[in-house]
Length: 89
Image (cartoon, rainbow, N blue to C red; front, side, top):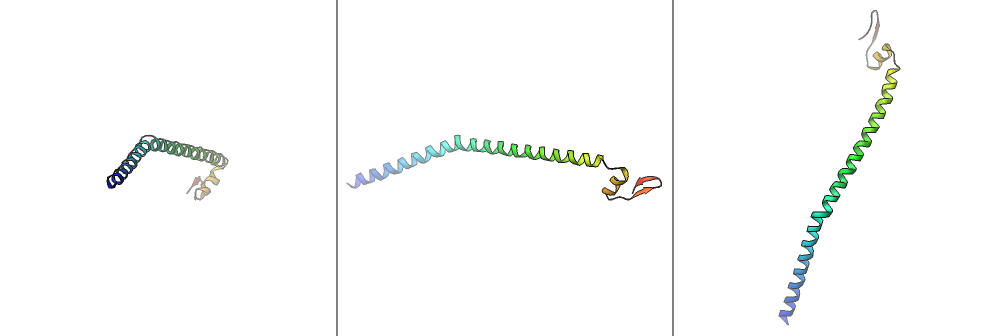
């Protein structure tokens, strides 16, 4: 009777260990690599979206700067436009 209980406990422990090892192996070989790859893909997509946004903002800035004359550009950059001769200081 005591041996039956010990055999039952040992069988339960062995079964739990087998389930644990199986799940850990499955997790390490299949789930984690897929999750890492998905994370990388999401990060790449976010970086690409941010790059596109920055390029669009830069294009708007280039248009605005292109409309400025030499004297206005000088002032925007923090300089002082001198008229004789025309130069930025």
